[in-house]
Image 1 (spheres, rainbow, N blue to C red):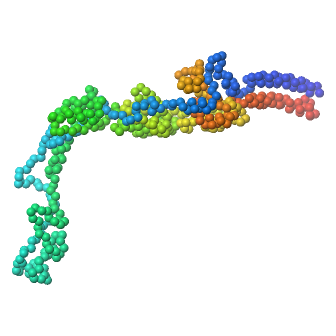
Image 2 (spheres, one colour):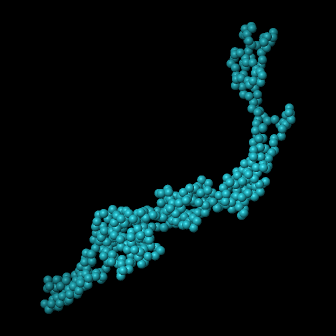
Image 3 (tube, helix red, strand yellow):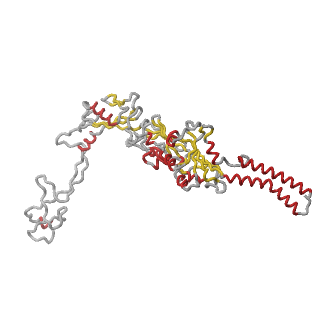
Amino acid sequence: MKKCGYFASILMRLVAFTACFVALSLSGCSLLPRAGPTASEVAAAGQVDNEVLFDVVEVDNRVVSTLLAQPKESFRARFPRDQQPPELKIAIGDIISVTIWESAAGGLFSGGPPQQLPTGSRPATEPLAPEAPRPPIETPAVPIPGIDQLFGPPNQPPGAVPETPFGAPNQPPGATPEMPPQGGQPPSGNIRQPQPFPIEAAATASDRRGATIPDQPVTPDGTIDIPYAGRVPAAGRTPAEVQQTIEALLAKKALGPQALVIVNRSDANAVTVAGEVVAGARVPLSSGGDRLLQVIAAAGGANAPVHETFVRLSRDGVIATVPLERLVAEPSENIYARPGDVLTLVRIPQTFSVFGAAGRNDSITFDAEKLTLSQALAKSQGLRDDLANPKGVFLFRYEPASVLRALGLPPATRASNVGSPVAYRFDFSDANSYLLADQFPVRDKDIIFVADAGAVQVQKLFTLLQTVTGPVITGLLVCRTSNTKC
């Protein structure tokens, strides 16, 4: 019995110690393990000693509407004047081809007139012509005695019109033979007539050929060299303007000159495509205009998933970045490329982090360009019903000054070029919050924190007490109910 009293005194001391421990734990719960601050602690930590460390915003319909109304990075907004295809102009170093025609033969750029043959003479070599059919045999009006008996057909009655042995060409036997044409009239029937070889047409065509000037680059002074016209300005002008200048300079020297200027190669009128997810190329632009997606396709296309690929356009010192998926989904963002553009395709995996009383604490990757809070929580397996405080779901991010002004929030003392820290709070005990979460946009590098419920700390306390006192109490009970000495 003395031993049992000794153990009882020890148990009383342990209970006293436990009571003190419970008091300390319930006063601050700082001695108990937990994943993060409570909801009240997060709200209180936003402002300390009149200093705003971060803004805490209760999410409602106004907040969601304000965030959705904020403008996104847009090619159409940053480059508003580039909705039409650019006018391509000749630049220094371009390879130019020029062809000149004249209205008649014998000019500066055409051959002399064809040599005229003397009248009545025949060329040394005559062209071959289709063989003309033989003319039909004329039948004399009065039969010649003795001839009919020799050459006439048998069984022909006297006085009948004699027939040829096989009939006239293209004429059935027994028909009256046609008379040969007179007065230069064309023969009737289907007799194939010889076609004269078009010597004059071939000569004329050869004399009217244009003279092509060999390809030449535009010199550093911006000109090209045209025979009989001299140095013609070309840089900074369109091919049509150069054509008009050449025709004007040759108007008094050539016979009705007409010029055609073609740019065979132009390094200036091209777009540079580079990046880690594309092979890279220098894509020349066509005169009809090429949009950004056409240029990217000409360079080989992106090798990364569309929702992870971003297009960075650098033009005239202005840089803008837009997701490739938006170029595909919104045709207005697919603006025309301009000479000198630099397109850089980069792969930026979009991620958000989840902490606290969620089903999955992890850094999760987006699988689309747009992601809402409801989708993000679903990817993290939602809130744990045994731990989570539905009124303590927070989303942390840095917001630009424009969003702070729209929400009427003061900038935090930690604000920087990245933005000002903001904690958006959701109350999922209200069913309307689920609709708001389905519209609330999640961005890259957002942090979602789910606070523990208040009862969780009490549960953790009793679990800890049971772990400490459970073996002692079990030993006392065994000692008192058994006959063994304790």
